[in-house]
Image 1 (cartoon, helix red, strand yellow):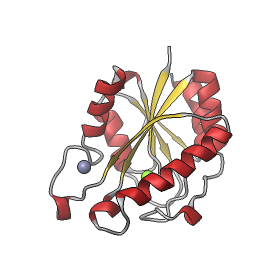
Image 2 (spheres, protein in one colour):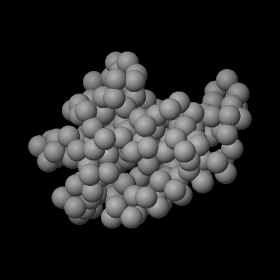
Image 3 (cartoon, protein in one colour):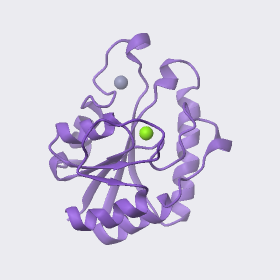
Image 4 (tube, helix red, strand yellow):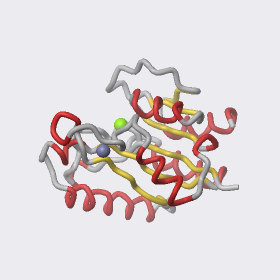
Length: 176
Ligand SMILES: [Mg+2]
Ligand SMILES: [Zn+2]
């Protein structure tokens, strides 16, 4: 059976420049492309990106900028043999747009994926570099992997910790 992997974008797949949106800043993290490819081949993984994009609420960039960036990223991944099933994003920020149901660790994006894919999130794996990514996965009873890029302090207790997606791909073999 296909394994659904909910994966964060910034700081997990690509370098997080904070409010990342410019194409010239698009840079895959070390091991990211190889790690994704490994998960795809060994687990038949289907990747669903879930990303908070408060920069849109803060008007630091537009939703169009976000899509242009994603299209380029998806294109480069496709050229490397990796397919991304879907990207969900939260364009809100509580201070500006009020509370929403989609900003991680809120469940909105996952609930939408359940409707769109008919998947069971408790059987998925959640991968990300922040507390919100781990808390989101845990709220659905799923296994979680924290990518430690050293950028953020993390208090959550994931199922496993990896320094990059290559290591995460290896760990998934032993934790699933
Ligand atoms: Mg992140
Ligand atoms: Zn939202």
